[in-house]
Length: 203
Image (cartoon, rainbow, N blue to C red; front, side):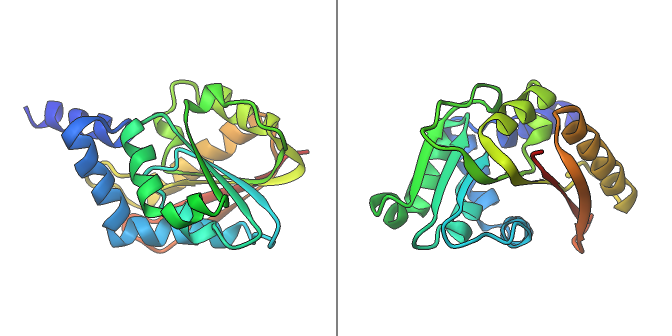
């Protein structure tokens, strides 16, 4: 019974829907470790004032809020209509100002964009994608040559340890390499369990 409940809740965090999805979005937007993890990921990208940033799996828009400075364009993608709604409310001023755009889409089926992106971000979402390599390959196609990507993972299974985080970092690096990214390096954030970020470049 507990395993079925855990799987059900995990599905809500992977693709929030309905009333429980709204609760999941509230948790993602307010839990201190989630907020810290998202802001850390934005800092690691070392964004320039005029950068175009794409976040795939933007959830309730915490990282978008941290990145959406004047002069910068931030585009958020999420397959959940609930999350797009929460991200829009959290970033309503930046949306009105034209600094933030939000689209409902799967990672594997990114919409067409008029311009390539300088940077890209995915925070605790790649593990929920139907086809992680396909999603990262799709992401690489909309990123300029030399563009940077940050893929963050923090294992959320019960009893997860630093060893699980290291294994997640290795797997993320493997997926990035399989999708054609290079110059992969790993950064770690001291949470419980640690969050890991694989940073890479589009050749």
